Length: 519
Picture 1 (cartoon, one colour):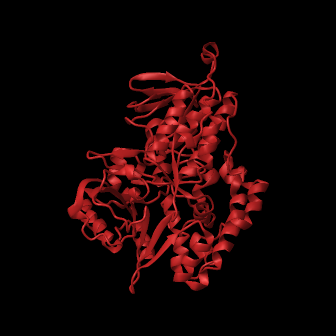
Picture 2 (cartoon, helix red, strand yellow):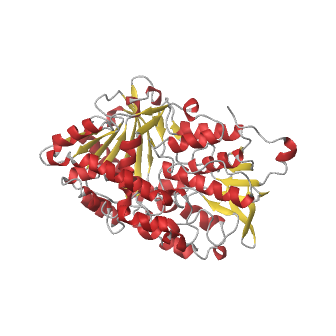
Picture 3 (cartoon, one colour):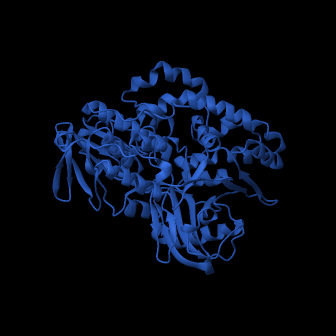
């Protein structure tokens, strides 16, 4: 059942909010603001919604996720849809995967394979087969991270609009659970002695573009969320969720303008008063910016208005790694390949050090998505759509991708042989490659850093760009570059934080409360 629209006479009096960017955060914010009674105009520079959460369609009928390939903790999204008078399950079929993914650990004596499952009995047995002494740590890990998530809720649910917000009683109580002096790998040593098992519960820091050896220990909750709440594939690809959000937004009255890049945000003093787009000034009572932070902010907002995040600070900030991508339409099916497979190099830690040093790894860890394992609609009959991702340095490395790309493409294809895929090249019928330079040039990702600003302790909470953007009025941020950070569930939660701030500031009804509190 759709939420009712205000009567036309009232609609003209509603506050007008312009949302820049129809990525997941922008779509979620637009839905909630419209459901609360605002008039919303959503501007998107591309011809489709979704940002990097879109589905690529190729000649020949191959379909690929562009960026994110699965959903965690869909409860947040379900609540956003419900607050807007819609039902996520009616809009998109969400397929829960079991196994969630297959981990392949390279070793000199052969590969070890772990099919990660949310069934704790089976998971313990799978770990016992590789590292007998570590099976007992699984349930302790789950119990402790359940407590950690509860302790960390304040950071996920509310804005941090001033440094003093980090000294609240709730944050101080959480310190014993968050162990801020520990990194993810170090914290996992309390549960698992075998480095492969620790890697099984820590490679998820790559969702933030970070190393488990440098990522704060609070992010062990990433793997916990997978096992506690599941890993989901939306039928038709992750873009199906973005398309569903756009449908709901339009039903609520959101005006979505595609192929409409924004040239700048307009200000009167420090107050945002609208945007300039396609040669037109669009007035607004508030502006929500959902675009890559490092790329968009220096272009759209005058440096003089950004004391806390001026151009110099943005240039000196720390950014995530990038990714080298191959989207391959391949003749044949691969029943031996799981929906998600992660090949973890025998030199995993060395690979990470190379990436951090701006060097391409020799034997890189590689992620492969084979979505037809669960969803035949992703490729023509008898064919497969393979998504291959390799973590690499961002553009600050100075690597020349025009010269590096052909060699690294071959290296990525060669890595597939470790998964038993020896004759892929001869069966490729469609191919698209995206390098860090491509992320920057074609998808407006600052420094090609696909996971945005790094999530180290000095770029989190109040130290991260704030949802009500620092030093300005009526300008708000949403997306991976603002609090609480990257990853789809966190971006959706961030959209709720931002939408609530806008609703409070414009004195319109708040549509939905944060989700992590509702456990």
